[in-house]
Length: 168
Image (cartoon, rainbow, N blue to C red):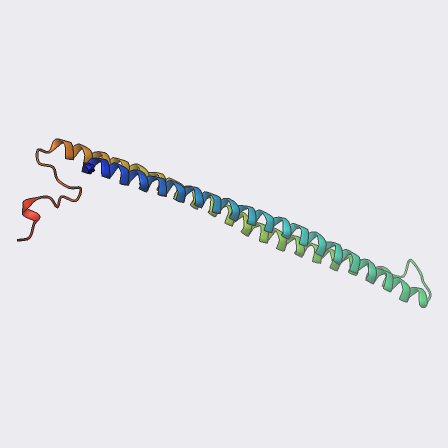
């Protein structure tokens, strides 16, 4: 049982196309998982920022209570400039720390957004390249089939059936 070269070329191209298509699907799946991982990392960054901000607030309240206890031991006065200045300084430092935590969180999330964008763009480029490869193989096979059927003397795909190409 023998098949003509055109049939073999079509079979070969079909197998190559299926392999390329499966590769495209695997790459899409991999990119989807990577994007989900980046999204999870963003959520983790946001949660960590909230936790750190809450810790700073709790620490500030603790310091204010300690300051109040110290002032109470030495004769508490709500109008004491030293007491009020210390309390406002604790608030200022806490607000500054919380702002820095938010900036760091946004910076980390911006990096994740960039990675998500890059993964999506590169995935689309690879997908397009795969489909272009499939189309190219189809056109090459069609051109070969057309050339093969048009010639009077059948020649192989790589034109090695020519008497001029033979050694000896």
